[in-house]
Image (cartoon, rainbow, N blue to C red):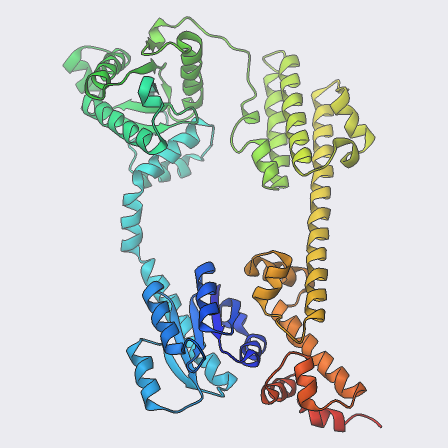
Length: 546
């Protein structure tokens, strides 16, 4: 949705336009109001305004001066000029400053709507042109290395693709890997001064190291690299042409990879003046064994290198490591903490089901006693984390039966633990939903109270948003979701209802009532009142039963 800024030194003009024009119907989501050019520029600084409608004759800063400043600083913003004078000189200046249109006041709703609709259509056409195939393709090519790196990171952390989705993405990202293909992996840790660099310098060093890898290995291996959560460089490799590799060196791909890894380590020391440690992994199948290969390489780094720098270890040196079975879905991104923080409760429930499905499946081959303990503490920790982060106590949010599990786990089977997990999740979700509902209700009450008390002064959307300390766009959405009525429509309706009340219950003159409900221009007040009630204020009063 677009954002529009209305600028006029007459409050009644901007408020009438804001309240009576059905902006949302032609793609305007937020309407800002300014009573001077200076205030308009302040709003432009803080909001992504797309269209400005401004009066020409204003004190201090004219509309022409304003649109000149706007086009210099925000050349993408479109402007429409309003004037109470049919002066050709103004029209010439509007054309000179590339204003979209020039309208005479008082402008009719129909003329303004038609002009704004044409402008909105032009903006949308411009967006569509900007999103053309060729531009998108150029942007895609520019970001291809980053997209490739992101996909490898997803595979390392356990993301699953259907075979077709995987093949399509590999083809899109120009990655020459296929399902079932043998692959190896290098895990590289930067040492000494390399690891102490700033983020930008570290990225440049990663680029330089990957260039060395490519120079050394590209004749025999396809290379796909990323930087993982440990800041290790992870390089996935597959053989370009197995028959050529065998005939040229007489070595297996595994031995060739180890040979190249040693050469890479030497070249980094020689040309980049820094040390790296390298772990050469076991080989496995793409893509299903990537996670296992990666985990074993990381474990090798941890157990065989520790903090010693500049080491080189290979899978052929490794004795068999048989770790206890790990419930991978416990740690597979997005983690429970991330999902809970985002309020994605349905996804949390699905993840819990995946965890216990994997746990029960592993029970067919392993004793799951300790794995169940691992699952319990991970779940309990995630639940306690989100409850405490929301400023609540476990004992106050959870019923006694669920709270007892945190004090002393009382499950005897994995199914009992799963049932407790789902019940606890539902309590957390219900509390979050109630809190959100209460917060939104409080916002609505605060807004309505502010509008009621300040109806005769400034009740523009920015003023209301400032009062409740929320962004105008967010406030508009919350209010509409809670009440079913747009905030500007509520202000307009309240003004009309109050005006009708004063007409029924007082002898105040029409211009006095106009001021009481926030209209300084009586003619505008009469116009908007008639639009709401189909009669003028005087006719409304005259038609009252005696």
